[in-house]
Amino acid sequence: MKQFLFLFFIPIFSIGQVNSVAIQRLFAEEKFVDAENVLLSYLKKQPQDIEAIELLGDTYGHLKNWDKAIESYQALIDYNANNANYQYKYGGVLGMKALSVNKIKALRLLDDIEAAFLKASKLDSKHIDARWALVEYYMKLPSFMGGGAGRALQIANELEAISKVDGYLAKGSIYEAEEDIELAEKYYKMAINVGGSLLCYDKLTQFYLAQDEPEKAILNLKEAYKRHQNEALLLQIKSIEKDNF
Image (cartoon, rainbow, N blue to C red; front, top):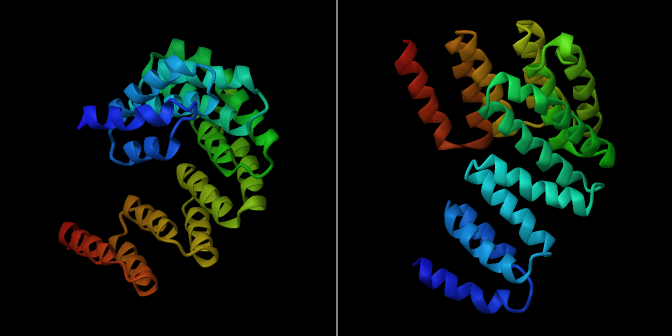
C-alpha cells in the first residue's frame, strides 16, 4: 500500500505543486508517517514550496515531533512573519514543546509563545483560534508572570466581539477554573442559547459532571437530544445513569 501511494504521488509532484488534498486524506486516515515520507521526498525537489513546508509542519505536529514542527513553522515565519496562521501554528507547537520539557526549559519558551499568539491576533482581528490559545495560555500562567483570569477575560471579551458563542464558552471555562460556579453555569447556558451546538451542550454536561451533579447533566443531555436527535447522547445518558444511580 505504501509503495502504491508513493507511485501515485510521483507524477503529481513532478509538476511542482504539492497535492494538499491527498495529504489531508492521509491525515484523515492517520497515516502520518506516509505523509511525512511523501512530503520529504517532494521537498527534496521543491525545497521552497511553502504549502508543502506548512503541511510537513502539520505532519510533525500529528506525530508529536515538536522540534521538527518548530523548525518547519519557523521557516514559514522567516518567509512571511505577517501571516497570522503561521504565527498561530508556531505559537501552538512551541506551547506543546513547553509541555513536554522540564519547567526551566519551558520558562524559556513562554515569551515566544505569547508573542506568536499576540501577533497572530493583531494580524487577524477575527482570528478565533489564536485568541482561544491566549485564553488557555493566560489561565495556565500564574498572575505574577502576567497570566491569570483577569488577563484571560480580556481576551475572552475580544472573542465575544467576534463570536458570542466562543466568548461565552471562553468565559465559562475561565469562571469554572476560578471555581465561580454560578458565572460558569451562566455563560455555558448563554453559549447554548446563542449557538446550541453539540459542543456547547457538551461543555455544560462536562461542567455538571465535574460539579458532581449528574441529574443536571442528564437533563442537559435530554435537551440536547431534543434538538439534535443524536443517538450518542442517549448512550451518554445511560452511561451517567449507570455510574451514578
